[in-house]
Image (cartoon, rainbow over all chains, first blue to last red):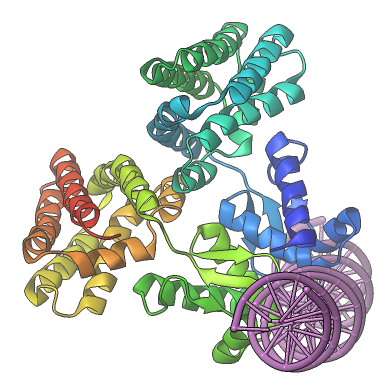
Length: 209
Length: 209
DNA sequence: GAGGCCAGGATTGCATGCAATCGGCGCTAG
DNA sequence: CTAGCGCCGATTGCATGCAATCCTGGCCTC
């Protein structure tokens, strides 16, 4: 996987994770090849990878579709995030530099100020916020496991379902997490992340899926 | 990923997970294509997937190598297994049928009887043993996360480093886990798995890597 | 009128060919 | 004798072509 294929994979990943391509959408090789201006070979390679990451589902001789999740699976995904992501945050806190803290702060403030008006922007900022902690934890295996779990649709469908109260709580959690990180208090940050995820899970489970 | 590519991926996975191909080994596309009797295209697709799974490392224009792990990463991998695998066992226990219990029992007994003489056989049986619990947990996201974490070399290098005492404990843990599962006692099984992993980790950390 | 079947078009799966890049070796200069 | 440069074989990356499979619609049969 290199240049063209890598780029194609990244583009698709981005589009799926941001919600630009809906769950269940069919992904034809020829169509993608035309759209991304490469031949089908790198497209196939990209789809292969995304399938291994769990973002798309491949059916033999029947092409690829953007993956979708049942409510049970979403519940399970939160269970796993609860076991991994607070841990990741704890590991990350002592490793965050001033640059990263500033960026996290910026993201948290921006999300809070916008208040969930711009849903697409929120999804993206939220993804980057969580991603930065995972990255900063500095453990490829941990990052891999979380990538296998933290799927787009979760984050995305999620925000669409938030009540105003849940949304407010969520946005304030981000800010609090940055404060904890800046204070160098891993316990605190970990606890906030845990609360953050329970809040998200409750929102999700009470409703559709 | 379908027929030839799928088969190639499975073959390679098997060879890597069983330790037949050592960590760091170079995987040339042409060589693999010749050995597995397919063209380079499905090989490339297979390597792509295995890279996403973390079993091989792809360097642009420089081919693929079987992944290897630093001691820090191995430590981290155990940390993650400890967070996921006991949970998986707990979920699995109430879902195990008589057939599966019998198979688990057979594996545990066989490993115990052999006592670590046949290292390759042990690695394989151990992999199947753990895999059955993960499978039985019935959660694709959990299985995915654990796959991203439970790499071959870990299990493999591991057994090679076991002291006789640690080996004995490990093999008895398997038997005890089956007893717990048969008793339908998820708490028990979970606790045994936790002990099992701590035992493995201690073995690994005290020594090289 | 409904259900099954067959043909045509579309799509995937794989093999092959060619351009681009990399690594190793020998050559030259200092 | 050593360090740096450039060429050449080897390998990867991608595009294209062809065979196999699948889906869709229209038709025939009951």
